Every structure is written in C-alpha cells, then in structure tokens.
Image (tube, rainbow, N blue to C red; front, side, top):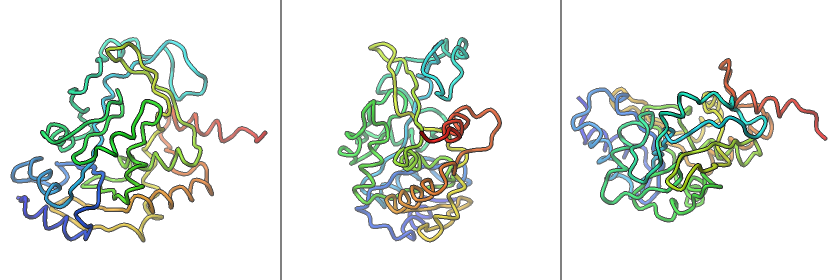
Length: 267
C-alpha cells in the first residue's frame, strides 16, 4: 500500500522548488492502493508545493444548438437528448468525473478558489493571480499566467492526452478554436476559443524527452515538465507540422474541422 510519505518522497525526488507553482493532473487509481486515498495525494502535493492548480471542468453544462457557425467541430441538432440532461453552472458544481477525485478534493478545500468559466473552470490554492486571468473569451488565460510565473506541469499517473496546457500551444500556433455553449443562471452563454481534441497529444512525448523528469510512485508513472519550455517545443512542432497532434479517431469532429481548414489553399 502506498502511503502519504511515499508520495511526498516521490514528489521531492522531482527536485522542483516548493515555491514553483504547478498545474496538476492526477489519477488516484494509477497509484494502486493509497492509504488515505485522494486526501493523501493532495496532502503530499500541498506539502511539496505552495501553489497548486487543477482543471475542474464541467462539461455537464454544455448544450448543442440546432444551428451555428460553419466548420465548428460539432453536429448541430444532435443534442436533443443530451440537452435535456444539461445543468446550469454554479460555482459549487462538482467537477466532472473525468477530472478525477483529486481535483474535486482540491476544489473542496477551504483555501481553494475557483474561476468562473461555465465549462472550463480551474481551481487552486494560492493561485489568485492565475485564476483571475481567465475570462469567457480567454479560457486558457490561467495557463498562460502560470507559464509567465515559470510554473510546471505534473502528470501523476496520466499521459499527455489530459495535459490541458498543450491546448495553449495549439492556440498560440494559430490552430482553429471552437465555440461552445453553456447553461448559466443568466441564460445560454457563448463560450469562444474552446480548444480542440487532445486524443493525439501523446505524439508530443518524444519531442519533450529532454525536459521531462520522470519517476514512479507505486504503480503510477509521474512526469514533470517546465511549462514554458514545454509550450515552446510544442509551438515549434506545430509551426513546422501544422497537422501534428491531431488524433486519428474516426468521427472526431474537431480534428476533422482542423484538417479541413489546413487543406484549404492559401489565399
């Protein structure tokens, strides 16, 4: 069984200074049996890093309209059933289960604060300046601010397909972004600059080998990457290979929309 101390010692082995802000993606089940569960993982993180950020996204607020902009990576009118299940966003709404239990535990900490995006909110401790950079028009603003602060990315038992920060490199490269819609108490909110698909993101791993620190804690592979260099490497790849990191999953509407745009002749 993995203990709090095992996790703390493993994180310390990454040699990241405690004052360095981090964005964390963590799968509790990847560690194996953890004494104390998510509380131990989060407690170890808090012991090692003063400022922690995690995605606490709420896709359950999303609706699909019957019509909208062309080439938007979406089949309009396909949400007749799912729209009935959509929920109105509120700041206390639990993060979706795909965000994992550790992120939800962080969101519930008394010291934690959350940004207000109705789909792509982040939660953090000692991250006020980072969280304040998000707006409905700039959902990835917190990641840009974290990069400005020389932050790091921690992948605890997960891979780059959940590395939200790579979406910022896509946006900086000029890759197509999308529009989505969410239910809010003020009505239906249009959410521009929604990122694309991340299922192809593991293709970046070989390019990031020289800046990746990797250890094992229990059954989990833990990777740590400095955010700004990671963005630089990814941005360089996307500028050289505009179709890089797109997935090959049949029917992926967002990757298809990007490929359609890339296939258009330059004016």
